[in-house]
Length: 159
Image (cartoon, rainbow, N blue to C red; front, side, top):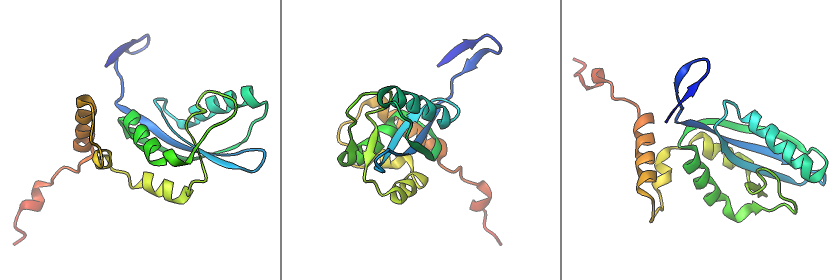
């Protein structure tokens, strides 16, 4: 998809987005994590939007830490995958605010971050029974994009 920019003329929209994990410590010392995606250049921008929404709803700002900010392809599908894995730990706030539906309670943060660090797009295909054709095409394209290219020198006989 392309769009016009005043300064640069025709600009190609990036296929990449950001997957992030925010750690919120609420006023009663309860810890919740927000796992989400954005298309901005930095997840910190999204963090500030969520904190603003939280403040409007609850009239205080919780402690918030950016625990992971990872540049990824097909961010919506990866986010959907992560939310599916974390569904049983879903946390619902009493009041709605921007991003309030993507929080999780009682997570093993170390395991979550390790999973994201080692994440491969192949994991999006595991256990899927029904998938849109466009989603499958996007996943296969992402797998192909990050697959290391074969070095022709490695095929040569070393002697």
